[in-house]
Amino acid sequence: MLPKIPPKIIEHANGGKGRIILQPIAGPDILKDKCRVYVKATLEKGCSMGVHQHKGDGEIYYILSGHGLYTDNDTTYEVKPGDAMFCPNGSRHGLENTGEEDLVFMGLIIYDN
Image 1 (cartoon, helix red, strand yellow):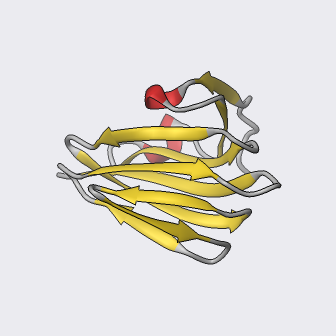
Image 2 (cartoon, rainbow, N blue to C red; image 1 turned 180 degrees about the vertical axis):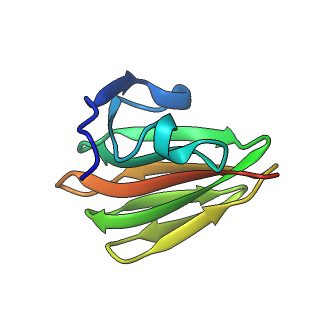
Image 3 (cartoon, helix red, strand yellow; image 1 turned 45 degrees about the horizontal axis):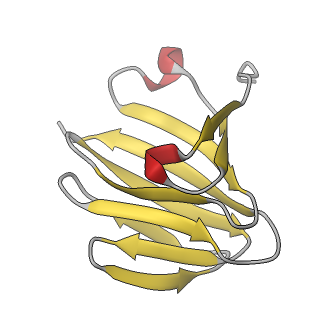
């Protein structure tokens, strides 16, 4: 069993609206030099993760619950539970909760070695 890591709350993440709640799944002792972040993330109603660029890594989002708008570089589209998106090194992405409930997703940032 992995040790519990306290959640982290970030206000206006990457210039987004409101806050994001990050519940780490594994820490650096497990991830080592393979991944930077592995979290369960929650965007409350009306909150967003601002559009940001990845440099030296890429990120996967997997939607667990809720609905939102995902921005992939210059394209924005609706996402729902079961959707997965990948932002490769050098690309930009962001996510906004447009639903009535929390938008919960898994985030995995993988180093681009």
